[in-house]
Image (cartoon, rainbow, N blue to C red):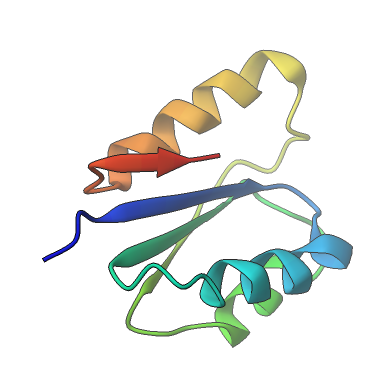
Length: 92
């Protein structure tokens, strides 16, 4: 079996980019992937967009944080996303 590749997508108000991002992640030719989307309390439709891409290879995590993804918490969000993966290889 090929190693698992985790595609980690933290987002905050990323509705306008999320469709293309998720479509690209799902179109990857590597057969053993997991896609993890962490919504950081978006106020747009990012969460709905991500839910629309639900599949066996994708996981959606919604954060109760209702603040903008300020630069000082971006690092925290990346660490949080990493903690949910079961990765051997990782792509940001």
